[in-house]
Amino acid sequence: MTVRSLGALCAIIAVANAAPATVRAQPASVPKQGQPAPRQGQQASAQAATSLTLSRALQQAINANPRVAVADRNIGMADGRRQQANTLPNPTVGFEVDNFAAGTSQTVGGAETTLMLSQLIELGGKRDARTAAALGDYDAMRWEREATKLEILSETAIAFVEAVSVQRRIALLDRQATALEGLVPLMQRRAEAGASSPSEVSRTQAAVGMTRLERERARLALAVARRELTALMGRDSPDFTVVSGDLGRLVRPAPLESLIKAIDDNPQLMRWTAIRAQRDGDLLVARLKPIPDVTASVGWRYYSESGESAIRLGVSMPIPVFDRNRGAIREAQENSQKVHAERSVNRLALIAVVAKAHDTAMSQLQQLDMLRKTVLPNARQALATIEAGYGQGRFTVLEILDAYRTVADAELMEHDALTSFHTAIATIEGLTGSPAVLSQTRTAK
Image (tube, one colour):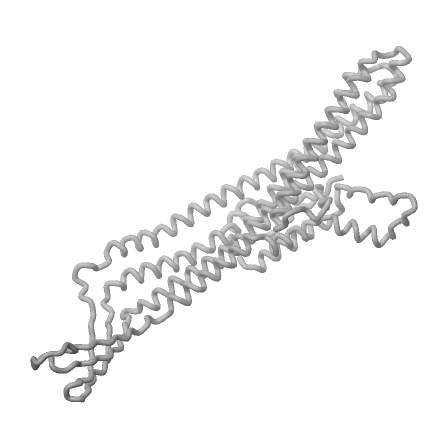
């Protein structure tokens, strides 16, 4: 998976966001007396500045999330290691003075000065092996950055869905509370006429209060969701007031078999190829270490007693008698051979996540189908019948409140199913690096 795949994911999710929003933006503030009303263009620009779309959230997350900067620095560090691995050993310069003590002995009579230059010559391709291992490390860091970007996109999409979900939940609770409040005047008139007990008014007002309380809890959840989304976007505080998204757009995900095949292109799995190359390079380095390196030296010697000079040549190399590096070779072999098992563990974990998300998405689609075809229509029809008959005294306050609660619970259940569905879809897209295959598209009514 490449940056092109990441860009495609960002673009496709943004296209899904282009559908009409199901959550209304907050109304524009009314100008105070004496102040000119804002122009239409100014109102539009103000709303655009405070409304966050999914495409803008994803773009800001990729550009500003510090985890991307960390991944970039890791690549730079790996590139430095690759550069260093290809470097030749430094030469060594030495200076010696022999027989410089005063005396009359023939062996101590004159000083001998020697200037030496030595160079370690690596044999067996050790430098090439180090470079290959460092190159594998560099490629692994590049795949790690792609995986980090994909994770950020997925996490941002999920956080965006949560923010839209809580915002929509607040709107649902507001609507439900308003509907319940509409019953209060009717019950008050019935109580004043002696057709019902004043306790019916109290019960209805209590139901309104419970709905308002649940809405306030949702407001707190919205603040938390906005903070989490803002952190993923790499900002200290939110620069938006509402999120603009459509939970009503439903897409049927691709078959699970296709998603499992797409998992193999996930950067988390692709990086294991580079890790295998790195560990194979480390194994080669360990095997080549026992090969003796040659240290060649050339020098100039000056004899002070005779005033003559001479050239001195030398060659030295270690004798691999005791240390054959067998322990390090064994460790490198085991480390190289366990790559396949580690990749399998990683792959199975990703498959488990994508399978769970796929099952969740399909289950939520079934629940939504049942809610919209059976539960919600019947609940709303029952509520309409009870509302019409309550004014005629054919139903009690408990029956009408129960009907309202049934409709409210069904609507919230539909809302939770939509939230769970879109979270699962964002998870699938984040693991496969591509949008869900649209075998069928349905939009909420």
